[in-house]
Image (cartoon, rainbow, N blue to C red):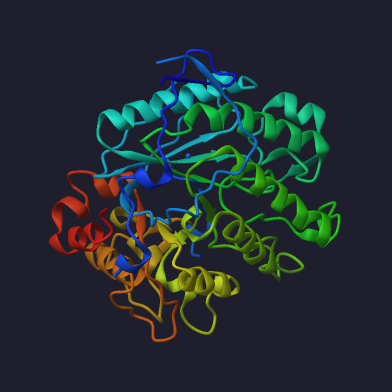
Length: 412
């Protein structure tokens, strides 16, 4: 039977259960020259014609899966209809701004499907990331109450997440257009959760002082995140991934304090809604140093990661920098010295970077093989998202046997 997605004439959606993902294993088996998503952590610190449309939450708990794979954190889709390039063994992080096709959600759906078709043709899979934050369609911004984000890297108006018009527009996009367009596509492995209050549109951090934001109170703000998670759960029949390497708001001295309770509550909501097989957790600041030592930068997220690891959900690592050009970004007194930071996001030329050491140690730590720090976070990670430069013929995956082995340990 050929299924034509609701609101996307001419696009063909494939019927497949969540259990048919090529990457699926049971939890017990778990032992960018790119333009990556910018993260200031790297500085120092997505046979009959039948209309498909459902508002029900797909049942993903009947076939728990663990997402495995070696994915490329490839450059984003910058123009409507563009096909992303990638070279990793198993596929890519397919990422684009929600407004890449302007207000045209049918065109956005067509762009996503065309990319998934291209990935499928190469025998790969894609993890879809639809960045929100200051990247919302203009018509949405005209209808919602807004906040003007001012960040050194990301600035512009964004919708307040509890705004009814914003949530309705997001529902129309996800539930009525994008979800039906990709439902059952064999190349779609998972979809990242996103919301308007994300600095770069994809990671959970919101680098704003809460005192400078029209904060409606914990109940209203938290409910907005729950509401948006519910929309993703209704729209997509694959695991929903949460970037959980960060807390919200600016910590002192730049701000009045972080909120690390909301990410944990949001994860628990998604897990209870979808089951362990229908949710995953990713760190886009993946480096052992963030959870090592008394001054661990991401210590506030540790309860979230420990609970998710105990639940046996899929755990993903997008490295905080490339190993090839940013090995120094993995250095820490509690971990190891892989190079010297010379400036924001850059490494000194001398001494030479320990590219292979950063690769092996980081991925072995992430998948639970061994750790450098004695008091760090203990995980059993299941998939990786490495920067494009690391997959090149001159990169560590191709040129260093130890790095290749560490990466290949995440293979499906």
